Length: 307
Ligand SMILES: [Fe+2]
Image (cartoon, rainbow, N blue to C red):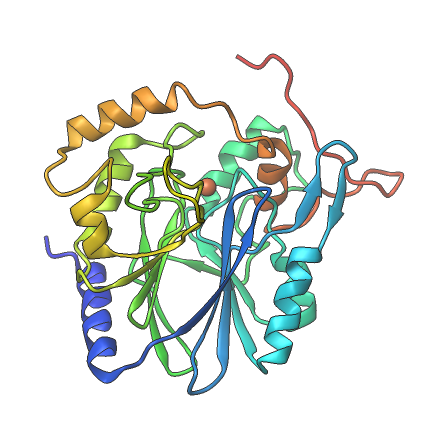
């Protein structure tokens, strides 16, 4: 069966390259969580999207802070950008989203993949979130399916569902650039883990091969960088061609079984991210803190000794 969503994304990249329709990307890197937040805009209209924002969080005190998000507000204001979208590539397990805080100050609609419903179901049960936690995606303004299309100013956008790291991962292809969340990392670092609840290494392989079928020239922006051994600087931009040639986990020639074996073995050695408990409970609510208890305070739960 032809992959019409992927074909649409590939055609979009080729057309935008031919016509010079390129987004301007400014990246804000959050050192504590190694997260790259991309502020993407159409230079013709100043329409902008903020992808995978970060709210600072101190786990010892439970305090949240918005220094990182304020930098983005300052940038958007100085550049006279008009925020149309706040996009999440997935429900992150390693940082808290600042999307609602940014939305309040800058406007825009909050979007994520439709499979968020599956993630809300998994984590709603895991954290015994109760009936006040709606598991219908209603915390978001838009739930995208594979192949969804919209525009950012004059730039075309095609959304691809790329599950595996989590069930709801999406890649946003904006003009000739792809924002691929946690699928591939820089070629020298490899790929995202696939061992979170609902994750699947085999599914991740298929999603990655799909992304690698985009034109080689496609600019690729990542959600994280951890500096590969021997590399001194953080990096978050590469190309599909560079990933196909050099990705240490999944370059051309690595077959599905070899990838799954490698990924599964590697995941077994990884510890959970420091902020997984608060991140998941906040991000499954679209970046909102859990409903306050009768004293007006929100709490993060930790399931103890869960088998
Ligand atoms: Fe992630």
